[in-house]
Image (spheres, rainbow, N blue to C red):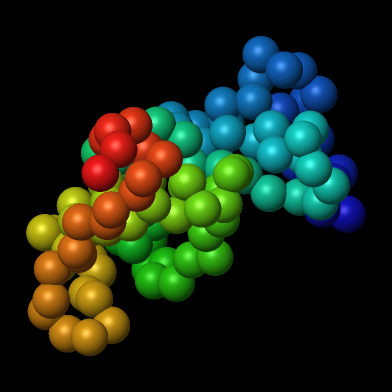
Length: 110
């Protein structure tokens, strides 16, 4: 059923996979199951999450590919934007999102 609904979103056309600004319906082409992906810059993804929040959605199940790199991308780039708008709070309270030290992110060797 989920796969049929996903197909209905884009009609099987690879040119129609962006079904809304920054919302990509091609996940089912690279792995099994239904799903969509928020794609774009940190600002664009934060804006789409803000739009969902305005509709009353306040919990998300998020993942990315590759998992670790996308977790850093989201945590370092999107969460600070959501926090600045009052849409996210660190689980420990008002603490700011700490910058990560990612040795493979092109920052050079230490």
